[in-house]
Length: 223
Image (cartoon, rainbow, N blue to C red):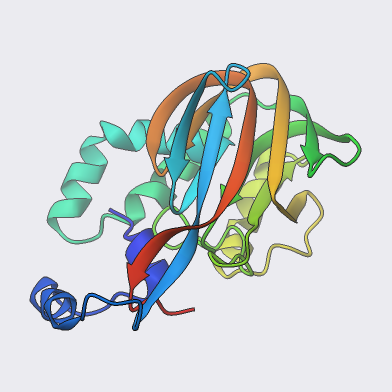
């Protein structure tokens, strides 16, 4: 519904126009690029999922879970406004969800403490949820993920900050933090919902996000 992967790859035009471009490409390295993929794992690495755009635990994952069976999403898709699904469900979910304390470890460095955590989104591209730029400077070809954490601020203030988030002006606001890293482990006091590219993975208290550099070859990718 959000077309975040297409947006991140710079894909434009109608399906027919895109198909013409694909069919006109030669089977060679020319005109292609290799991009990173992300991997999220849980249960001490016993299970994992790959993702191209993002994976997250907390609010963004709760929104994705609700969107999977949302009648609002079905209606908005029919009128070609599917990306609004995530905005509507974000507002509703923000005030109904429980926050929790967490700790984070980035590239094996020291522990970071997070009070009243709302979400942690590991971004391979800059935007998820229909174009919301959680990590405005994220790049899918730098060998790193950009982890956006939202924590330690009242829900009403988070709501007031949503316009800044949509406008990619949130990184300077207290309670929003973006960290670039090759891998990140998040441990939560209480379980939260986890998603990978919008697909529900379960509810967990510990997850690990890892960047897998240059794993996917794509056609005509634009930085």
